[in-house]
Image (cartoon, rainbow over all chains, first blue to last red; front, side, top):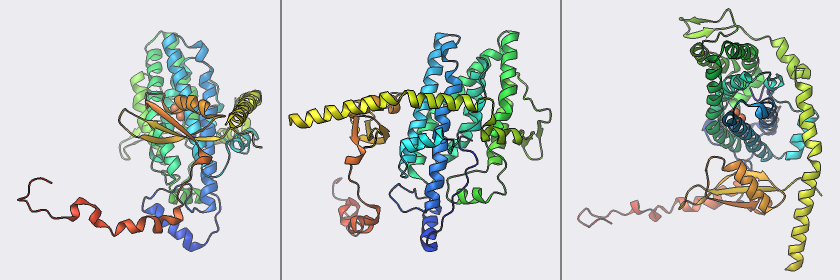
Amino acid sequence: MYAQMIQSEKTDEDPRALAEFQARIDRGEKIEPKDWMPEGYRRTLIRQIGQHAHSEIVGQLPEGNWITRAPTLERKAILLAKVQDEAGHGLYLYCAAETLGISRDALTEKLLDGSMKYSSIFNYPTLTWADMGAVGWLVDGAAIMNQVPLQRTSFGPYSRAMIRICKEESFHQRQGYDIMMKMANGTPEQRRMAQNALDRFWYPSLMMFGPSDAESVHSAQNMAWKIKINTNDELRQKFVDQTVPQAEYLGLTIPDPDLKWNAETGHYDFSEPDWTEFFDVLKGDGPCNAERMEARRKAWDEGAWVREGLLAHARKKRAAKTAAE
Amino acid sequence: MSNEWPLWEIFIRGQHGMAHRHVGSLHAPDADMAIKNARDVYTRRNEGVSIWVVEAARITASSPSDKGPMYDPARSKVYRHPTFFDIPDDVEPM
Ligand SMILES: [Fe+2]
Ligand SMILES: [Fe+2]
């Protein structure tokens, strides 16, 4: 997902305080920034929300790649609005993380020094315009699967950020599917581009949910704390069940010869993605990792004079105002 | 001195006649920029007709541990609600 493989951080507080805290969560109460919380809860959330925020920000790059080359002015305006929304999502989430006592600059530095990750999906290239369709349809589609339940997460600021984000995501997925419909019903060449985009984004999209976590202790703790709501496998299955009929409608083929409806389970059976590839990408060896990090570093470094200049100007203005009073 | 832009809490009036509501926060070098940024971050879909920005450091909040002494006294004063009083049906609507 946008936050993949979040290990829960160890906590060793007074068992009575922990039990009381757990009881609040079990009663469905929201935890607010100034409330007492276990250190592990705080640190796990910083990691998860931070990774989620970084994913929104880095996620602008593969789509930003096509803004200047959109096929029509309307498509360009739509893509621009979509990418701008993702910037907003990043900002909502950074603010939520900051309420836990980490600064924005520290979060950015952790992204740039590699100690915080972003979703593996954004390390794949966007080669043709059809990829804008596949990304909106599949990547935002998978993100929605994960974000909708997270609206009920136990941490108030995270939950409120997710509610805002979910209101905006449906536009993202629909504009993607709209591009896919246009391409799939276009010339044979456009159709091939649409199929090719699906071929390349299918397994990376399945990887977004992370490896099976049925056995994971971390996952159990995070679920008890309600910072993870469903297992990775549950969400992946839901995504496949929802997406297969949408691909059929487009007349496109999902690149999985073993994909078939299972009447007994009421779900589609499907092939697992290549988890070696997933771990390689996560480690930094995906097709675009270096390029993405380079772009973020460049933006941070080359923006330094703007950040400093505006702050200096604001301080000067304030000083002049105080002097005049 | 930290070079991080200060944090601003953003309040938006969604429609005429409604109160401003807290929607989130953002960083900006000063109040004017905070309003401009709030426009882009929080009203991309016509969510507002007016924006307030307040520097987060200037907000004083009640402390969660005072919850008992702060709010419990109100609990026993049920007579503050109109439903506390039985008015006979014969009396005109009140
Ligand atoms: Fe997003
Ligand atoms: Fe999105």
